[in-house]
Every structure is written in C-alpha cells, then in structure tokens.
Length: 391
Image 1: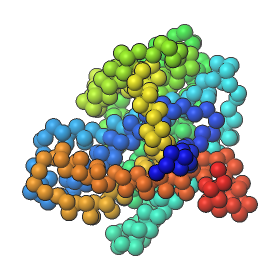
Image 2: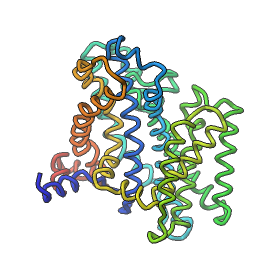
Image 3: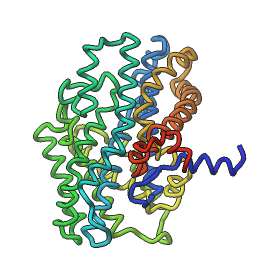
Image 4: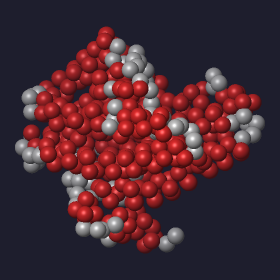
C-alpha cells in the first residue's frame, strides 16, 4: 500500500468530533479499553468452543485469569465518558467556553448514538429469529427492552440479542444526568478544593455502594453501582482544564505510573470496597499518565491506535456476534498446546478480520451520524454512501 493511499484511508477512518476539539490521547485510551474486552470475549469463545480436553486444561491457570479481567476496559470507557461529557460544561462554568444548550446536548446524544445501536440490535435480532434460536414472541420483549435501554431492569439479565449492551444501558443513565452532575461539580464546588472534594465524593459513594449493596447485582448494573468510574472522568477533566502541564514538563515517571496503574487495575477490579478505591485511583493515574508521560501519550496518539480507538463504539457493538461467527471456523484450529499459544493464534486469525469488518461498519453505520447535519442531508435524499464518500 503506498503512503498517499494510506493517508486517505486514515482520513476516512478518523472520528468526527461534535465540538471540533479532537484529543488523540482519548481515542488512544479507547483503544486501551476495547482491546481487553475483545481479548476477554475471545478467550471465552476458546473455552466455549474448544474440545474439553483442550479448554479443560485452562482452569486455574494464571494467564487465562488475567485475560478474563478484560471487563476493566468497560470501566475505563465509563471514565472516558465522564471526561468527554464533563469537559465542555467545565469550560463553560470556568468562563472559557460557550453555554451548552441542553436541547442540543440531548439531541446530539440521540442522533449520534441511536442509529447504529438500533440498526445493529435489529439486525442481530433478525438473525436470531431466522436461525430459530428464539421465537418471535420471545425476541420481541427482549428487543424492545434492549432498544429502550431497560433490558437488565426488566429481565435481570444481559440482553439475549447482544449481551454487551448492559454497559450501554448504564451509559444512557449517565448521559441523562451528566449535565446536572457537571453543574454540581464545576459550578458549585470551589475550584481550589474541587479535586479534593470530588475525590471525597467518589470514595463516599464507594462506601455507600458497600453499605447499600449497590456493588452487587442487580443494582451493580445500574448507575448506582458504576457512578464512581464516571466521576473519575470528571476528576480528570477538572485536572485537564485547570492543571494540565506544558508538553515540555512531560516525564518518564508518568509512563511508569501509567503502566503500573493498568496492571493494578487488572488485580484490583473487585466488589470489595478498599480494592474499588485502589482501582479508581489507578484509573485516574492511567488517564493522567496519558497526558503527562513522554512515551505513553506518543503511543496513544499513534494514528492507527487512535483510529481503532475512535471506532470503538462500532467495534463494541459488533465484536461479540462477529467472534461467535468467526469461531465456528477458527475453533477447528484447536490442538493440544498451552493457552498462550492458542490465544496468540486466535488473535492472529480473528483480530484482523474483526478490525477490517468493523472499519467497514464504522464507515457506513456510525461515522455518517457523527456529522451534525447527517439527518438533514439524509432528508434531502443523500445516501449513507454519499455521506461517506463526499468527505
């Protein structure tokens, strides 16, 4: 592939931001969030589809346990959501940005996120129906509950159409409350003590989670059980806006802290209170390292890292059904061998296909709706293909 064509592909796949302010490190963090999720679900498929004489040897091993911690990526996504939604409100309350129209804010969430979500959930429901996995009578209730983000509330279980949608239900709960939370944090908490007070709120909420049982199902799968991770994003946004250092002050120590924080997250993800506090602290350090380090920010800003991170919504929505499909074929490659070798092999086989298909899906089912005028142009009979190719 020649270099000019490579630049064209990168430009096509680069995410469009609503505010026009692009922070490459954030998309790099999204990459860091989506990859553990993919590896976790890929490992689950290995255990599910490999012969018992192969997968049975994985039980109790350290490496499979480590990969199974991939759900920490979802909590990193929550913190990133807190960061990006807090930032414009924080700028406004600090007098450094324009007022945020709540009407435009909610409309943007609706027009940006709903079209690809409804499209994929509808497609997956149709596939399940056509394959006879579930009856239409069973599917309709699960489908409507999933579409309106109340599936776990109604059924007390993950969506049978796309299990990963549980986290999107919590994201929607947060989106609804984000402006109010931003007002409470950035308008009413004094700037000089805001970081300390917000940290106290986060720790206090974790204590409440322990005492009231919000950290256990079913409330674990609501905003009550996940709010500290979003508020961690608010805490980092406060630092980013008011205390961000100059590029010349970046230090290697932050790279070491960032790597250590990520490793700490793997082992501290738990329902236990003290471990949750450690996890949240590590989460904050990781995000700070993404801006303060010398090497880590450069890695996160690397074009293909940030591009894949920018496609994470499409990847997240489609990766589990795609892995189920791919493993119908790749599971036949199983042999008597160590877990790590199988994992590397499956990553080499499945990940390129997954990323290629996700890139195509991103171009035609998500990126068009990143543009503010997407629905107006579609109303004027512009096709999704034209919205993509006219860039």
